[in-house]
Image (cartoon, rainbow, N blue to C red):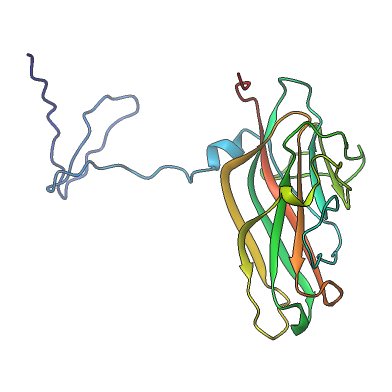
Length: 223
């Protein structure tokens, strides 16, 4: 049986200065730990591709005080053709812009259509804003406020909480916010629908703005 050994140089206080394209071995420190240099932040390369977007309700809206059925505050419909781009949900957010102590708390509820949606958001709705500046949206996403979901996908059982909640403080919570990363754990396929609403203790005493960020990517089809 052949024995394979890898020799790693130990790097101390002296730092090597390698030229462009020069191949050198990896380094370890005195404890045997491999040294890894930090590069770009995790999402920089993805956002640099230029197909990362965000959208939010244009004006403040009242949250609901019970889990809804078909009602939503904001929805993202993927109008891509079959085998087109999927929308990878990056994160979502809620901002409290008006409130009284009666509200008690806020949280976000999401609905991901388990089947192709029969409800299509209007072509003219909220225009997505770029996560990489100086770009205008030219994709097929449709974002709508107050969209009523279809009876199959919009049932109460399909709503689920995402992220933390803003707890009851018994004082006005203006300026409180939720900003929750999803790390790509929700994907809206072609003809899919993703919707958000806000749940609070007293709808008439609160106004919120909610929204989401997403990346449009070609992903392998499900087999």
